Image (cartoon, rainbow over all chains, first blue to last red; front, side):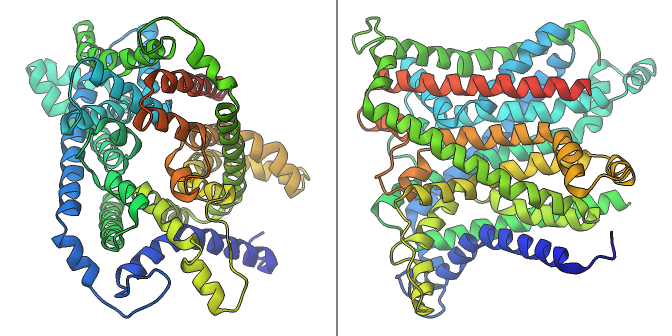
Length: 263
Length: 271
């Protein structure tokens, strides 16, 4: 099989290349336009950092960026804590209550975002909670917890019961055993749950859109409001910065996890 | 870690889910079967029989099916090719293929608007090359393109995962026993990857069916899907009762899909 260089190999490479082109064309366009000094999208007016400068000076963009990052950080920490406590409980349930819990956990993950969004919006209004920063935060925690649980729960299953018993036999209190033995064992699950929650929150538009109320913006809702009125080219600069940071974070975390595997 | 008292740790989570997931869904149900004065009515649900409403539902189903099929047709060969590469290289490649997914969805959809516009980037390049221009912005084709772009990674991931779990010796055994490549593909590889295909279909179909963002940005307000209709009722018309009545159909769709994927999950465990 391996020796057949033939046309098939070329077709395969070409196919990979076409799909990659499709995936990266919009991103490359954004990056190129972010350096374009002309405001037109179809003309190249020369290289410039003007839109990056305009982005940093734009109060709305910076405000939305601040909200986005703060909501992502608080909601992912809260979701990780609630999800961790829930996972301990769910792990100790019997089969039938456990499957009920897991079905409920699945609801926000499989439900359409628009349904989750409108249901939360009506819930907040019905209970007289005014829409704003706090309601976005509560909504983001809600849709993030299930992902945290799904990341942590398997780690409990894989953990050996013996090591906890050993710690207890050797005189550790249950609290000590939990923090010194259990937590280090399930740490990979906690970290990946936190990261999923964080990126889900950063990326969310639909649920934020319904629960944000007037006058409040995250990056996603700001972009959406601009698509109707014409786009400020600073948005291209912002996209490029976001893409660059995501790329950097993922490449670093990839290297770190590979280095660990090799050790 | 096994201790009966630890069951109590589920209480905060149970309370959270009750308040923020279960009660809100009941609120949709309540609004869906009442009118603006709070009297019982089925008019909101039966409003789906109005032409404008069922048209947007059927259009959404139609476009979501096309999008799902295209995603599967792109993702499956891709996953097959990646599976054959040596693990280090395929790990890097799958990383490159999934990378665009981490960029904000709104920005990615916006980028397609810029590319496809009448005087956009693609047409500028085509004009420069003296080729006829492409006018698909504000059509169904543009919406499907945006859907495929945004949701393709949701298909690639599960399909690639289920394909890379297949034991090579099974495939080798079939080939040694004289099976041709297409026989191996249709009788071994595809049947073994059904769970991945099913979860990929669910992960693409539901967001494609319910989107209003892509159809608003790339359809230019001319293409109204069921999600867009519900969004209008909530954010512009402020008719929550009608919006809730229509979203009940989306909830039903989601239930059907959960049932289907649970069925396939069980089979996987038996195997």
